[in-house]
Amino acid sequence: MKLHAPLLAVALALTPAVSFAQPANPEAQARTAFERGIADVDAGRFASAVAAFEESYRLRPVAVVLFNLAGAYSRMGRHQQSIATYERYLAEGTRLPPERVQSVRDRIAELRREMPVVVLRVRPAPFTLTVDGRPQAVTGDELALDPGSHILVVSAPSRAPQQREVQLSPGARITWDAELVAENTAAPTAPVVVATTPAVTAPAVVTTPHPAGETPVTPRESSPGITSRWWFWTGLGVVVAGGTVLALGLSGTFDTTQAPVPGTAYDVSAVRW
Image (cartoon, rainbow, N blue to C red):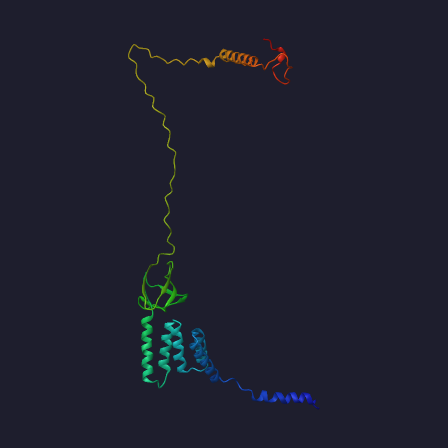
């Protein structure tokens, strides 16, 4: 069976690539990431430097990477991680110059002095604590944190948790006094006030005894006034009507020469003066 010339050329071209392909060199990648981290530190990009140094150490765990990673952590204000990384550097480094060891220890002491402290006065004990949503172990009643803003939450079984947000400057020291109350404590119930209508008491009737031999006088009903008589209102109506007719006649309203006013009770032709 014959191979066509073009296919044979392609096969021969691919053969070296397949045969001599080598995996990437972790040491070279680690050095590249390390150099990128150094450049980021010089440019002030400390978060990027931390990521580059962490990648470099993962590819090739060398003590010198830890030294530079600890420095980047401290420049970001992550004092706790910086201290822990410096301590790893001292533990993993071999044949470190004495002056380097002393400078690292001095730097660790300086970072510890700069860490703010929160004094916890929480009742009852024991209690649990989270810092920025992560569980935090507490030894004694003092808690060392990184400078910056933090959210602290304390809780205990069957107790309502309490939360506090703190803004900590380097070297600060504050106290948090918290009393954890029972979670199911019911609020006091207000007394029920029932409004009642007071009974109306009839006024007492006081009777005065009459002397012997005298007949008590019974008060007579008051006589009706004149305005309640039928003849009073009848006479008043006649007087008012007469006065109205007289006034209209004097003013010339009722004139025998004009026709009757339709739709009225006054028929001008019937008026005689």
